[in-house]
Amino acid sequence: MRASDCKAELSRGAKFPDKPADPLMVHPDIRRMLLTAKSLIEGNRMLIAWVSRSLDFAAHSEDTKVRQDADDFVQLMTPVVKAFITDCAQECTSASMQVLGGYGYIQDYGLEQYVRDARITPIYEGTNGVQALDLVGRKLPLGNGRLLQQFFSPVGDFLATHAKNPDAAEFVEPLAQAFERLQNATIVIATKAPSNHDEAGAAATDYLTLFGYTALGYLWARAALLAQEKLKAGDDRFYRSKVQTARFYMTKILPRTSGLLATLTAGAEPLMSIADEAFGPFD
Ligand SMILES: Cc1cc2nc3c(=O)[nH]c(=O)nc-3n(C[C@H](O)[C@H](O)[C@H](O)COP(=O)(O)OP(=O)(O)OC[C@H]3O[C@@H](n4cnc5c(N)ncnc54)[C@H](O)[C@@H]3O)c2cc1C
Image (cartoon, rainbow, N blue to C red; front, side, top):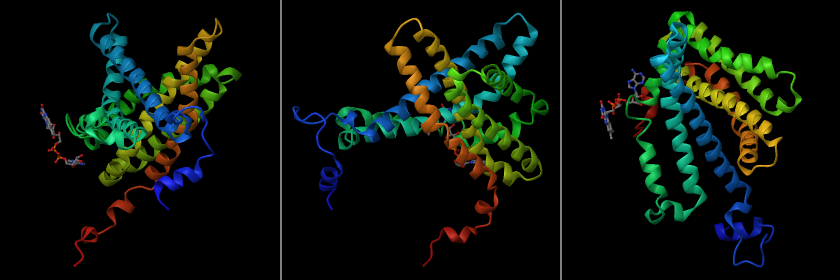
């Protein structure tokens, strides 16, 4: 079947028959791609703002403890910010190109330039694989997990504060599940990695990515509760969009943490047991 026939067969007729064509926005798959990009980009901007604010505290606070805590947080989050966000950039630019189909691929509309520009970012200033090793091999063990507490404490406090708030449940419950997966992944790494470098290397990228999604889950939950509060004063397109995007993130993106915990737990054996010759050539 030709692609155009398939398109016609699967379409349930025009939604706007009075217009020359339906806009792309009527299609759920287009909305999936746009919302994926929107939720990851806005979520990552929140993450950048959070870590940047801590950089200021680390450099300028007059309180020694505030400076130390902020510095611990920045050290912990630097590989996450560098690698998770640049990995997301691949997905967001590629999905955005896909939204425009063939028009996205050709040079005339400028999207392919974004895809090419984004592609270098996981490579320079230390590849993302090496950033993940930095997180797992250096940042996690530092001070017996002292750095990690700078992330785990605020998330744990937030979950405890809102555990019984029914208005928050649709955001807090998925976050609690993702956070539990991150804690379980941390235990897996703390158990296996110190005695086996391959286990640390095999887990590193899954762990960093799980960390990134959980961080965005926390920030989206906070943003959604704040936006809900603002909406009590009257409807507002900006805040309504924030609540709806948070809802998309919690239901359509954050469950990826489940798969990441599974692949992380599968360990190094499926990677390291295959002989180099198995990659070919075979003639
Ligand atoms: C356009 C461009 C601009 C650049 N600008 C600058 C600049 O201004 N200043 C500067 O200092 N550098 C710059 N670089 C260099 C950049 O920092 C390096 O390309 C980058 O750090 C990756 O190093 P590499 O190319 O040697 O790759 P490699 O280190 O050979 O990595 C190849 C692959 O192996 C993996 N790998 C390597 N070592 C390990 C390990 N120990 N454990 C697990 N996996 C590993 C990597 O993750 C990667 O997937 C630039 C590079 C490019 C392409």
